[in-house]
Every structure is written in C-alpha cells, then in structure tokens.
Image 1 (cartoon, each protein chain N blue to C red):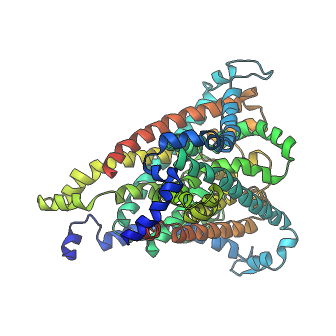
Image 2: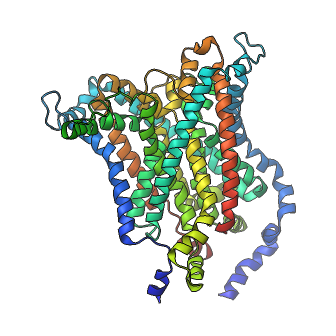
Image 3: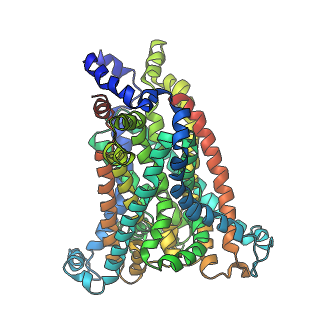
Length: 313
Length: 276
C-alpha cells in the first residue's frame, strides 16, 4: 500500500512542482493565479452590487430627496409624525409580542425534541413543516386564518354553534392589527424550532454526566448548566423572531386590504398612492426607519450568537 | 452501561415530550384542517363534498381559473431561472473563495446573509427604479424578476452549500485532480460539483420553495406570480385560492422533506470517499 502510494506521488514530483508545494503553496500559487482568480469574483460582486447594494442605497437615499429631487430632510422629519410613530409602535409591539410567545412555545417544542433521532421520521416531519410555515407561508397563512377564524371560519362557526361564543362580538378584528397576532405566532413558533434546536443539541452529554457525578439533580442541571449556557442563544433567537415579524409583509398584505397599521403596509401605500401625509418619497424614509431598527436588532443578534458560540466548540 | 449513560441525559420524559408535541401539533393542525374543511363546503345548503376539487382538476383550469395557471407557469419559470442564477453566480464564487481567497470567506458570508437584515419590502423600494432600467435592457418578461429573487434566496442557498463545502476537502480534491493533469474546468465539473451535489440540490430545492411562496416583490413591482394571483382570485373565488394554497403548502413541505432526506451531509461516506 505505502509503496504504491509513493510510486504514484514520486513521478509527479518531478513533473509538476506545484503539486509538491501543495501543503504550503500560498505565495507561489497566488502569484501565478491572482489575475484570473480575481476575475472570477467579478460576476458575484457585480450581481450583489446591482441587485442588493444599489436597491438598498436607493431605498435609503430617496428618503432624503423631496418631490423635485433635491436634498431635503422633510421626509425624515415625517418619521416623527404621530401617525408614523404609531405605525412603528404597532409594528414593534406586534413583533415583540409574537416573538416572545413564539420563542417560549418554540423553545418548549425544542425541549420536547431533545434526544429524538435527528434523521428519524419525527424530526424530518417537524423540520420540513417548520420550514414551510416559517419561511414560505406568507399569503397562504392569511388564507388559513380566514378559513379558521374568519367570519365563516371553522372555529368561529364551531364556537358560535356549540358554545354560543361570538369571537367577533366587539367587531371583526381579524382584518385589523389584532388579527395579525395569531397568524404571526403561527410562523414564529416554527422559526424558533428551526433556529433554537441546534443550540439545544449543542448541550454536551459530558455536562449532564459531570452534573450527575457531582450529585446534581435534573433541576440543578437545567438551573446551573442548561439555562445559563442557552440564554444567549435564546435571546438571539428571540431577536431573530422579532426581526422576522418586523420585516414580514405578505401575510399582513393578504389579510388587511385597507388601512396601514404596520410599517410594511405603510410602505405599500406610500409606494402605490404616494399620498401618505401628502408627501412623496415617504417610502424611502420609512424604509430607512425599518433598516435602522433591523440593523440594531441584527447587530445584537450577531453579538449574542458570538457569545453562544463559545459553548459550541 | 448504555442504560446508565441514558439516565444522565437531559431528555424530557416520554409523557412530557408527547404532551408538548401533541398539544402544539394539534393547535398547529387546526388552520390546515380548517382550510381543507373550507374547500369541501357545499355552499349555502351545508354539507361537504369534493365538487370544488373535482372542478379544479377536471379541466376547470382552462376556463375561469386560467389566470392561476398562467401565474403558476410564471412562478415555475421564475423558480427555474432563479436556480440557474444561483448556480451560475453563487456556486463558482463560493468554490473559488474556498480555494483561493479563504480570507474573503467572512465577507462572502456577511454579504450572503445580508438579505435577512434588509426586508424585501425595503428592497422593493429601491428595486423599482432598478427594474425600470432592467426592463429597457431585457424587456419586461416575468423571468427578469429572478435577479431580485436570486438575492432573497441567497441566505438559504449559501447555508446549504456552505454546509456541504465544509464537509468535503475542496483543496485536497482539486489539487489531487490537478496533479493528475486535469484542467480547471474538469476539476470543477467532474470533481467538485459531483461532491457538492447534496448542497447544490438542497440549495436548489429551498430556492424553488422560496420563489413559489414569494409575494412582496412581485406584488409591488406589479408582476404576476402564483401568490399575487392567489390574492386576486381569493377576492372573487376564495375556495379555489384556498385549494391552490393547500397544494402549494403540501408541495413545499414535500420539497423540504426531500431536502432532509437528500441534503443531510453524511460525513462518514464522504470522508471515506475522499480518502480511498
């Protein structure tokens, strides 16, 4: 075996020096390939620049232009308008509420999944169902909730016929802000399962063994080891859920046909009618406001993730 | 021995496990069941039958539902073009960075995960002017939307491919092939891509699922895809819209189930494959 290997490698050494230097070749190889290799990055860079960088820059920049195209701060000042502030407040409140509920329920599901076979049927089904509901539902989740708790929805009718409970006694709230809470939770819980489960699986069995050999109970394990180790991940996932709800548009757009109670819907009306508060380019200012919130949340998220990565080495 | 080791694990008891999963699972099934129930309703006289499903499948799509079929066609075209954009632009770049520019890996990761931070609704504000230029260059065909979709699938596709890239030793594989006289094209097509097929396959599947579910960008750029058509149809015929929504959800579920089966990296096999 060893001889055969040497005989394969040996003749190559003479023929192609580059192969011999394979282990520490950075300097010599880079010199030979720099120009063509670098060109290989151009398509990706150009694509990102044109379809991610440019649109983002335009979205953020138009907020600083007035109707005639000259620089102005009036649209940015409009962010302080009580109507806009209420909308941001609604968005943040809705996102925070559904993120907290979603992360607690999702974490409970993750706990229940500890110790199940990662390639087994249960996990495959849970993973796929979570993926569909968390990321691709959008419009379809709005339909699902119209069919469930719409005026003629299954649950609405059942509650009315069997218990005499009218969930819309105080008016139909499904198509307004409160109506978004249940559909949002419906995609937040699956997202929590997708993002938090890997952290739970990072809990090392040695820690449980150390806990047991030092005389700790199940409660000590969770209280002294599990919860402290998982807290940064949990908070990180909570922030990710917040960001997810905050940037979500499709479900709300399909559910509420009029009114703009949350920021994404306000951007829609600013884009389509351009008469929100009688200003043009307000969409740009709203986009800027959203980006500011998202950047804060996602920066905190990545800091927390770095903190939690400490335990996952 | 193994029984003793098991006692140390922080697993929940079987009762707790199935109680939690059972309750959450049942609650999450309600809206799906409600959708099915909704499509089976027989109209004002009450009762249930399959008439609406039969109507949709027995040539009903040629008549009043033709709009949905066109939109579905558009979404399929978008899915295919998006996957092509992703494969042509992202995959070679990731391989190149892994081979030649390892110090750029962080930067690429940052760029690829950036679309999570920039909501589609924000992106669309800036995409409108970009697309007025794109329309002049490529025409106003629906497929051009794939350029924007390539961006929103980036985080998903990146993760799928990166997981695969990390599991194989790209440098050793390509150097082995090079030392045996293979050109770079051969290395890419006959050595690296076959080794990356799981990651590429799951990146493609997840891109298809994302594109089929996309609404925001299409709606605000006034293009027709499956989701925008469903919203329009739901106003005149909610039953048909719900039927198609159910089918789309089931299809996406099966796609992801397939990823779970195909895309799971099997380290053992790939490492023995690399060393033999």
